[in-house]
Structures are given as structure tokens and as C-alpha cells.
Length: 460
Image (tube, rainbow, N blue to C red; front, side, top):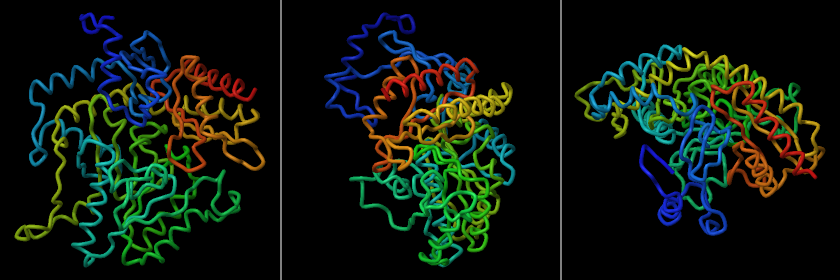
């Protein structure tokens, strides 16, 4: 095979992978039976692997981040030019792309005006937690440091982020975890934690947050974090009233609202940010994945001016500012990639495309609800999930082996989809679809056809 004009031996490259690469979320004891997939090239939504197989990627890079699709020369060229000019200087100083991107991002987020950079979603959330805890120390006598999180939401892979993650299997073996976090119920109507049915439920899943605040102590709870739409935990868009109830409770008890937009942000759901579907007014917003469409690693912890102002204190106090740093927060090329990715989303009207193609995809999935194992379909924009069940009456989840069978049958048709993986005990039964925001009607129809064929085949 040829790569950048060089002749390369595919067998040798696969051997190097097998002998030296430690893959993510992979049981390497199975590698002798099936060689790992090695991706080589991508354009738009299409990928080609080292064996020449081609795929339509309905996962935006496997973990929902290549929002503007593969092969964007304008991003690569802009990044190259910036790296030649100046690749990096620590964010203790400024750089031109950082200033430009911070201003651009703030213009897309009414009420948000300050942008702190890191290099991953986990790190962005860690910065948010540190801000909350520092404010608690400076302004509340060392109290209001507890952060609430929601069951089934995922907030990252570091120990602090995992401590605030509502997915038990993700956390297994990695404890002990950080104190100062408490869980509230999930917002999945299909599996209501209160045994109720919307709209006659009084949105108890949201109101339960007040009970947790009272249990933990109103003087101890400083913030709550949500994925606006639960992503890997089942693709769960809350009902329309949900965040208004949450916002009211936050206001009542002086609790900061953090929105983790790592998956939903930058257009995935048909708006710039998922919280915008609910008219929520967050104090802190975190994001990563689609910020630069994964052409460069970059993450953001963005805040209101009020949060920022908590750190404007007497300069003679050597401790009373945000004493934190992220090495790669100073990567100028990351901001360059983010600026160009954002330009593409705007100029190609990809928010509207995400909305329209998302409606097409969700509509096609709803047409599959009459299939025997399809219990529920959910989504917003180009983020959709299919929950598979053994029995529609009891809603007993299918086994992970069954989900793997379906996903494999979809891949055999040249379409890559995701699934809930080692997250929720007994409930890893959701297939996830999140193609790039450039998806066309033909792309969506190809995805839907492959999914339906696989579901029909698996049910035989």
C-alpha cells in the first residue's frame, strides 16, 4: 500500500499494532482470533482500513467527535501555517488564535464570556470542579464544594471525573473515588426511576435533586453537572420541562449549573449546544470532541462573567485566584483548528443540516418500533439511540452479546455504529448513531437500511 508516497507493508503494520499498541476498551486476549482494525484514510463520512475495506462511519470517529467530516484540507492547512509560525506558548500568556477563538465562542453562547482551555473533556470537567471548590473555599467558608451528578451521565476518565460519573461499570476497579460528589436520578422516561409516565409525573426525576440537596446539606452543595442529553448512557433527551425545574432548584439553593457539552456541543444536536434546546442558563459549560472536530486535541471550560469575577481578589493574597494550569491549553494550533471547524459549521449551515438529517434519522428509527426487539428510539439532531429489549412488555434488556451481534451485522454491510459499552450493569443494550454533521439524505438512508437489515436478521 502507498501512504504519502511511501510503499508500506500492511502485514508489517498490523504486526506492529498487535505487538506494541494498547488499544482503548479492547480485550487483547482475543487479538489472535481477529486482527485489529487499522484505519488508514477518510473523506467525508467514508473510511478505508489497512485491508482496503470501506465503511460509512456513523460514529464520527468512533466517539462522536469528527463533526465536519474527514479530509478537511482547510483545517490541516490552517493548523500547519500556525504551527510553523508558533505552535505553542503556555496559556500564562496569550496567543492570537486563543483570543480569536475565545471571542468567537463567547459570541455563540449568550451569557458566557470567559474561556479556559485544556486538552480533553475529562480535564475540562476537572477544571469546572476545581472552580467550584475554589469558590467554596474563598466565598463560602470552605463549604459548598459538593457537586451533584446524574445517574447514567458520563463526565470523563480521570479519577475526579469518574467520581462524578453515573455509570457503575465504567467505575469498577478504579476506586476509591474522590469524596464530594452525590448522584441524582436519571431522566429516561422509558425506564422511569419512579414508575411514572410523562406528562403525569410532575417531572419527579428533576425534583428529586432538591431531596439530594437537602440530604447533603444546602450549605454543602455548590454545583450540579449534566450532559444536556445523556449520550453514552443511553442517548436520553430529557423532557422539555426538565431543566426549568433544575434551574429553579439551582436558584433556590445557590447551586451553580454546569453543562457538560463534550458530546452535544458544537452542533451535534442541531443547535450550537444541547442546553439551548431547553433555554437553560448554565454558569459553566464544558466541551471537547467537536470543538476542533478532532483535528487537534482541545477542550474548553467556559464560564459566565460572574463565575470569573469570583477569582478577582486582592492581588496581595497569593492564593486568591484560579491557581491551575493545563500544559496543552497553550497549543495555538488547537485554537486554529477550532476556529476553522467553527467557520465550516457556520458557512455550510451544518446546524440546520444536523437538525434536518437528525429528524430524518430519528423518523426512520421510529419506523422500526414495530420490529420485535426494538423497545425505544431516542435522539436529538444527529445523536440517536436504539434501545433493544427481549420483551416489549417487560422491557427486559437484550444481552450485550445480542447487541454485538447486531452491531457486527451492521458493520458487515459497511456501516459503523456504536453501542453502550461496559457502562450500565444489565443495561448495555443501546445502539448509538452519531454521523458527522455533513451527512446527506443518502448517508442517512444507507445507515437506516443497514440497521434495519441487521435487526431483522438478528431476530430470525
